[in-house]
Image 1: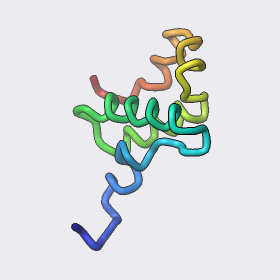
Image 2: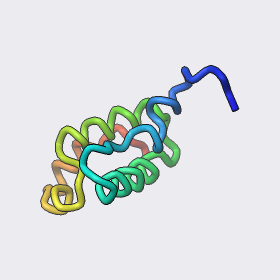
Image 3: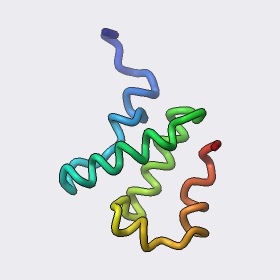
Image 4: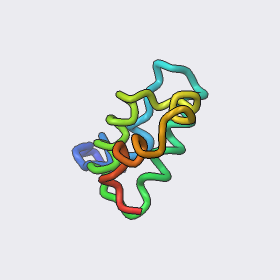
Length: 80
């Protein structure tokens, strides 16, 4: 393993981004979202997008109530 933990994946990787304060169900949902966003996208962009989603409220219940236009704005920097 690397001794140096300064690579973008260390702070913006899918495992490092989920919030733990909302319980295991929300943490697992956020891991799933981070993994889905990370395909073909730099870790820093995924990190920025995940933080925006978390600020919005990254829970299953909240995201399911969010209009598609708002979601598109929140994830717009991610390249699918």
